[in-house]
Image (cartoon, rainbow, N blue to C red; front, side):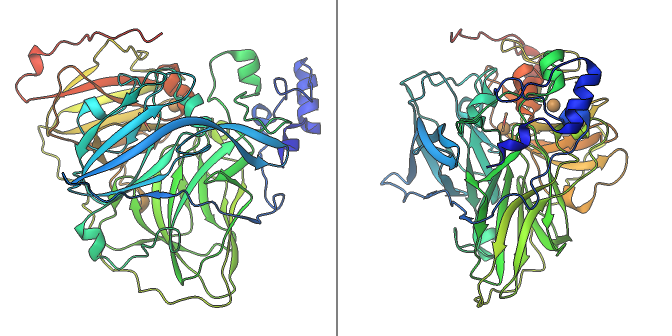
Length: 516
Ligand code: C2O
Ligand code: CU
Ligand code: CU
């Protein structure tokens, strides 16, 4: 267990001394991390990667008599043995930690009973899903303690790897960090027709990557612990841990049995960015981004950057006897990038192939995902400036304020920039394509359909955002930074989608019910 990394390094002590503050080890509250003193963090070679990777159970119910797939989800507390230091108190869905992988097809009617057995109110948001705002599970769809929530909708979007997590106003960071998150896989006829690894848990493997911080008793700590947090108040990205879990497994190993393995990666971390590749620099092929397959052929890469809430599907080829490590490498995220881990390096997962591997079909040459749509000259263009750590265009999130009114089915251009800090920008209920990064064509890995994208100093983005037909003049969707501390601190806005032509008659204040 590597929480020893959190004790003071010599360099930190020297720097702390120079700043006239004291480095106190031993307690969870006052570890003086090196983060603000520019020492990169690493676990490379320090963690034994020998614990079999946990595969979250698949929930893929048969449709009932009415053609509905009914999912029963209970959000609960529990205890989980994650690290040697002790049994951790965790939260999960239908289990103590994390959540089952949900699976449905385009055209399915899905229906949920979500029970809140936590000691506090929460919500459950379907990240990346296109659905009516009433079922989005954002901060307006509170599930009270002991209550149940019953959203239902028809799946109507392309095959993709989505995820789901709580979204309570001001408390998303804590609820996600304690363990409530899972994948939501969508299939469709097109994905069925592609020769891709598709056997869940065998050659189609979820990888939910999350950094955690454990205290000396093995409890999850949310103390950011850095200089800015201790002395600079809210100007922080929130918790950054040095212990990396994949599907909740500390020190994981996965043993493939086939030549090709498809990994569905989710960066489910609160703030940390990763730059994923293999220890031997072998290439892999990117087949899908947040909201579906890339267009054209698989993209050959040796690294892929993942900010909080971003997903990719990768296919890697192995030879019998291969023993490699999936790793996070240094990357350039612009100024202040080191505060979200740009300089840190981690072993994530050991991939150890047996002496014999079953054959896999060759990857298709055409994946069939849609490229960026042609944006008409008269498209609405909106600009968003992510300011500091808690506002967008100078405003902090207000539950009772509608920031934008968007006509149904609109294709809009959103320009998003940040002068000072790295962020990931996410839009609910829509899919976007990156048209430009800092005025230039995006790199191949950013050309697929997305719902979350890195925005930072030197990395402004221009997005073509396709909204859907679900209208509700009273209930908003969210757009926000997916660094969860930023989201909780107010770097979030609200939009309603309405019948075209009715924009002018929509009220921009909404009643909110006090849930406290
Ligand atoms: Cu992943 Cu507003 O959410
Ligand atoms: Cu979302
Ligand atoms: Cu942010």
